[in-house]
Amino acid sequence: MWFEADLLPGYAWSFPLPDGRANVGFGILRGGPVPWVPQAESGTSSWTGGDPLRLGRPSLPEDRRMAWPIPAKVDRAVLDHGPVLFVGDAAAATDALTGEGIGQALLTGILAGEAALAGSSPADVAEIYRRSVRRELVADHRMSTALQAILARPTGARAAVRLAGATPWTRRNFARWMFEDYPRALLATPHRWSRGLMSAPGAYATR
Ligand SMILES: Cc1cc2nc3c(=O)[nH]c(=O)nc-3n(C[C@H](O)[C@H](O)[C@H](O)COP(=O)(O)OP(=O)(O)OC[C@H]3O[C@@H](n4cnc5c(N)ncnc54)[C@H](O)[C@@H]3O)c2cc1C
Image 1: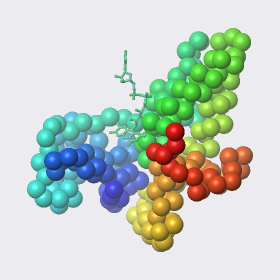
Image 2: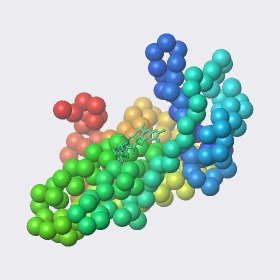
Image 3: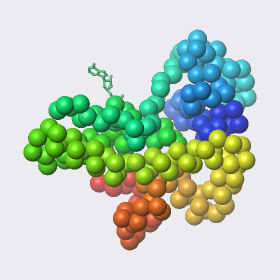
């Protein structure tokens, strides 16, 4: 993972694949210094295309580059319409800091199912669903938005990476927190504290 000055508060990733291949991508904010749609669609992105050193040599794209908007505004999203409940990306439930949304899609799906079972009318179901999405996701969204402002500056990003890498414990727990093994706003929401939370096995190991 990289934090490059021109991508902040976004980041780039390279996930290794078999046969010397890699899944490479970057997440950026709309309206930031890196143009997003026109160059990514035309395959002339200055970020990856202009500087092969950033990807390592020799690296050749095996397909066209693609760009996709990631909605991250669950605090303002419309969550229902009549008897329909919106979940996942349709509820803009992705994490504003990392752009991750698989966990949120599963969680909002579960909350929608629970609301459907608990409510006595479409309006009641929608109210229960809105309340539970607020309870589960809005504090984390606000925390991500606040941290985004810190990571948007190179000094903030450098300090965060330095702090995260200070000890093996901070390295392990930063990674787990960053990728949401722990709720983003855990420290600010005591109702979610429980014994052993920080030492439980990761999501990969449960069930
Ligand atoms: C480049 C990129 C990288 C990402 N990396 C990560 C990551 O590492 N970790 C992570 O947690 N999240 C990641 N995300 C975000 C994550 O992919 C989404 O938040 C998540 O997939 C949302 O799930 P969803 O079920 O709401 O929507 P989707 O996964 O988009 O599912 C919606 C489905 O509905 C289908 N569909 C659309 N219209 C119709 C129609 N009219 N009829 C029938 N079917 C239809 C679509 O084809 C699609 O299969 C990434 C997103 C992008 C763009």
